[in-house]
Length: 262
Ligand code: FPP
Image (cartoon, rainbow, N blue to C red; front, side):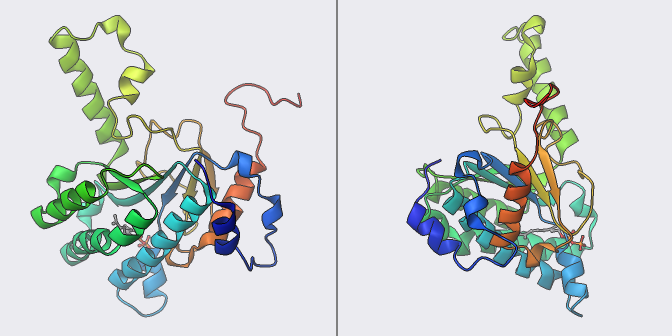
């Protein structure tokens, strides 16, 4: 994706002492960066606040990381907002999150329009409360013509459920004769996932120090590089993102082969 060098320099001016922006290789910015936004609850409780305050603070970080990804020319930024397992949280927290998702989408429409960001949802949106669903549908229409960075929001998303859904769709296609069993290949699965048409994540960032995948993009992360930081999501900012990308650029990605040096 194209990036505007002036806007980039402006957004990333005054780097902290441990970051040298000149070290960032703009030719090797990951095409798809994915964030597991973890630690909102702990951020809040460590400050004596209600967990839901952590989610509100997490929105501020999300806005900053979306803007930073646009400035860097990232093609796709995805974020894990609500898993199929998150329904097990206390009803009050679920309600607040559903309200927050809708409110955030409306509040951020000016940003999404200004930055030409296209939004897609990953997950079973139909199962969300009607109010949230209606706002999502309205927001999607508002952003429909955008051609810039894709923001993929995983809401009511589960990696296993996504693969089961694709398997059912393949079975249906075989049953109605539109797909031959011998034509089932990786692309037949990939094009039936919520991420159809999007590149796989090259860099997955997980905040709050947890080292697990949590049923996230199980198919798509086959060759992703992971970056784990102890920082809670509400404290994660543009510089955290740059640190993650610098770490990514320092890695030897072999995709099962041998490195060029060997
Ligand atoms: C994980 O922290 C975070 C979430 C479950 C929700 C994150 C959602 C947002 C920041 C808003 C996204 C906005 C839109 C429009 C989709 P946690 O509660 O698991 O934290 P903990 O591990 O410390 O308990």
